[in-house]
Length: 311
Figure 1 (cartoon, rainbow, N blue to C red):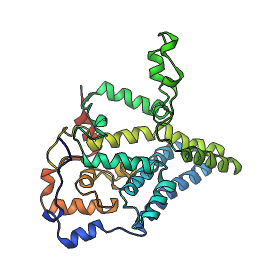
Figure 2 (cartoon, rainbow, N blue to C red):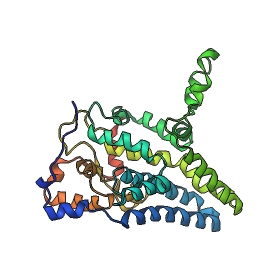
Figure 3 (spheres, rainbow, N blue to C red):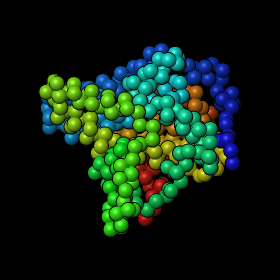
Figure 4 (cartoon, rainbow, N blue to C red):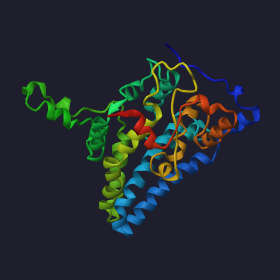
């Protein structure tokens, strides 16, 4: 069907409103990155001082790990800082080393949102799914199997399925493949942090409040965010108001599942020039214009799960 339909901002916003919504900040994005790392650092200090708090702190850290990816996403759009060099440096070195590779694919996703050419379409096309299927995915997430597959392309389920077949069909490459585009900086950065924690006598803390959240909690949060954004959005959707979904989240849902206003995803697809911190204002202005009735908006992540599953 080709390029996704667009909306003319002038149809919904005054020139002054649009200017405010699209204004980049030389400090706001940097503050959000500092906030994400600050929350992680505070969680680690609390975990070191009061180890019994670690189970509570694990999802907090996992959400900020997602938050760093959300801020990298803003950097991919050039919205984290008005200076492109600073934007890309912060996005790469303080958010995710995958920025350059991510940008190439993600901009294609916006250009062809929910069209056949959308590179992210396989993530949303399988829905709805049976509740048992979603439950199996959740179990993979919280047992670390999704982490192994996502980060290192180690698919234990594939190995289990093929365990009775001839050896020639179970190759090393089918069990351990280099992840396309995996930046060595990711590995060296992790090893550096581990070395620093070990030097300080807190190697266990790196495992407890960085690796454990990344392996056993982050995949579930990441999956829920992906489901909320595009699952059950029709393929070849003609309306530019409905290429994504906005989830109106409570304070605790924002804290645990939707850092840095990522829940306003419909607004983001409608107007990709908006920094994440201006998405709530855009939502409010759209509500005042009566545009929400044309948009894909639900209340709460529980509603999303009900929407995308069937008995």
